Length: 288
Ligand code: G4P
Image 1 (tube, helix red, strand yellow):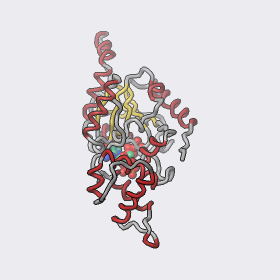
Image 2 (tube, protein in one colour):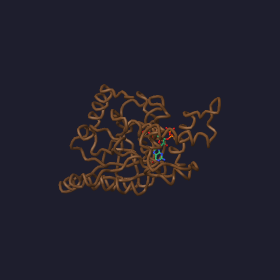
Image 3 (tube, helix red, strand yellow):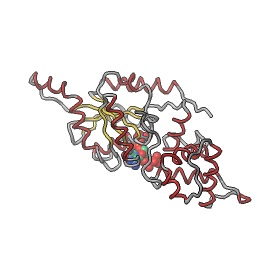
């Protein structure tokens, strides 16, 4: 199944972000630590251009800690400044303003050399829907200052939100669209909940997830669902469906005639992933 990606969305989002870039000193690019590449917009370099940028691996609390380290290293190897954070609890977010200062050091030093008093750095948060933009704005603002959701027209005009550090945020984040022409990217985003469930068949998403878990998080998978005879690999969707069937039986996800209700079983697996019941899981590995 191919998922549609609308170039029109991207063109509009790009234009809106580029308007905002004129107002700011630094971009905070929010991505999902569980799917660091799939949750990025592939045109981000072109959109942001030479504007200094700090990459934030959000939801690091849900991602595999070892993989977080590998991904941080991977982004640094491309010369990016990057931090792992959890916008929900605030872990790592206190380091943001310090990192921004480092990124803007030359500019700040120049201002000081001219006898100017450097003003607070101005930042724009950008990221795909559901990556945690509003949560981060609220966290940095220390109060419920940000609009929630991506509803257009909620705020009229743009406002600066002051944060504790020497950092000001634009109150409306830049919304990027993921590009999921590659089916694997689509499945990863659907598994984490970034893409609405109606877009992709939930049982196929669960099968994709099981294929990944069977190799990358085998013990977790076996333990959580009490699986017996889990093959070393699930090479195709058929073999993954057999495992989904086993899980469905164990969890009592039955339709009429004793058959397994695959959609229900898929719902169990996806809920377990998203709520962290499967433990901390990363769905893609950096190629180093
Ligand atoms: P957005 O503005 O980019 O669209 O995202 P938003 O802040 O609304 O966050 C989307 C969901 O992600 C929220 O869950 C939020 O609590 C959660 N979230 C954001 N940052 C983090 C993080 O660092 N760690 C964890 N564990 N969760 C985070 P929600 O309100 O329950 O929405 P939903 O899950 O029902 O979509």
